Length: 420
Ligand code: NIG
Ligand code: FE
Image 1 (cartoon, rainbow, N blue to C red):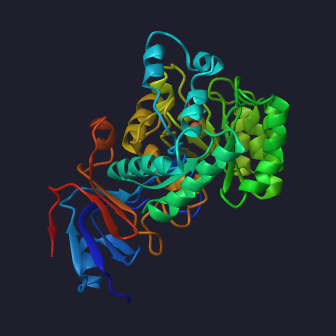
Image 2: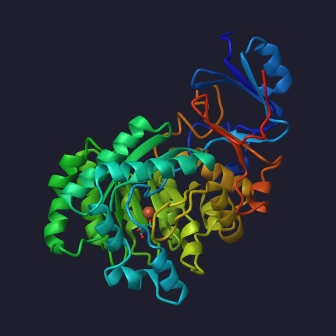
Image 3: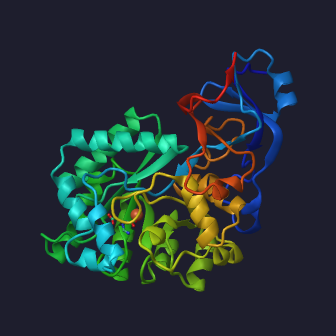
């Protein structure tokens, strides 16, 4: 048996071990809790999970031991939908919205995404890199160890490329695992004719950016792209070799999820509004629903995605922050678990599955991260609580004591006691 470098002992350990595929229906409630559990780590990988007695007996020589003192230990969060690279902020829009102006009204009048596009076009790659790096550090403090990042605040060749280059540099230089998504189809820029932009999106841009992003994403919505445009661009992106994602059903269900599922999209995201027909099609085709309750919360909407309907249809769902300057500037997957439980009808266990293993599958990383099983990455968080439901109970607090990425401690609160 290979020796371990490190043990985490005396944990209430959630491994999320189970079927090697996205979990749907009742399966999402199974967290695989090991009471008085322990984890053995070698290099960047998990060697074994078991009880503290078993693990200490099997790996007596481990150089370092972290004593979790009975606290909750679980896989690092996977934030599978974010817009982390951008310049500027939009807190002024939040104040407008608090006075009753809506998100779509702000977008249509040239604010919203357009205002972030302006700021991002004006920023240097170096500035964007440092902004992105700092935000990723904050996410690590909140327990996130893998993140997807989209372009989409350039809406021209130069700036989309600048964003993708920054995302790829962050992927090389920040310890977080980063998955890049090309979102030139975020909305139609105000300085180009619609048909001209569509032509570039479906043609040259795909070829140019194929080597810089794994997924292609599009915002299908009133004020952004129609269902027909979405179908056209998804088809072209698929042909070029991109994996597919859509922003759909946020304010209006234009039906794009149907085409996305039929084209084999890995995920459809938002889905506050979605028909039963599309929901079961997603289950059939293996398209995961990425639910982002931070968005309706921050936009003060009454309409949240309904996890109960996903459960009933057997459609696997994931959770994400959608971190962005307009509709959800939150770094916290813990907060998303709270909101998922309070507003989307998720059980806490389902929300935890959604924030870890199912989120990993939603970005094609289910074999590597999202659960603590032999051979997977040693991406671990220790929380300042003993039971899963306390994540939602202490809402709004950052409960993270320690974040470990690939066997290395990236963040640790001073009060955590380490022996040896
Ligand atoms: O996922 N829905 C469209 N795009 C983002 C918001 C982007 C923005 O407002 O800057 C989202 O919510
Ligand atoms: Fe988004």
